[in-house]
Amino acid sequence: MIKKNYNIEGMHCGACSTGIEMFLSNTEGVKSAKVSYESKKAEVEYDESRLKDGDIIKTIEEAGFKASPVA
Ligand SMILES: [Cu+2]
Image 1 (cartoon, rainbow, N blue to C red):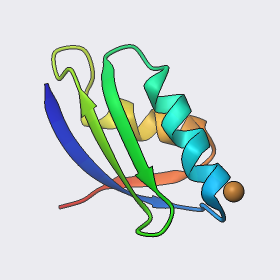
Image 2 (image 1 turned 90 degrees about the vertical axis):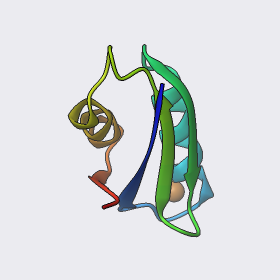
Image 3 (image 1 turned 45 degrees about the vertical axis):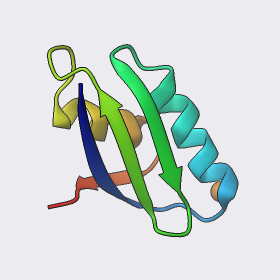
Image 4 (image 1 turned 90 degrees about the horizontal axis):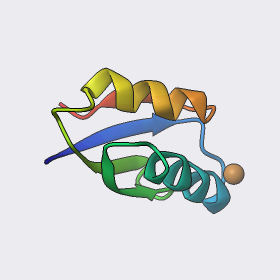
């Protein structure tokens, strides 16, 4: 398991962050996802043998938002 942080663009309320959390949580290989509307960040814990950085970003984009890894 690996834990990574992402910056998220395009959220305008707490429902957006909850929606992204649910979207990520329903993704196979994701163990946990915490999204903060206040800090515009996501903390995702996932199985690195099944998912890559780019898969997490793609999943967030599929939910309708822009994501980039926190350096
Ligand atoms: Cu919203």
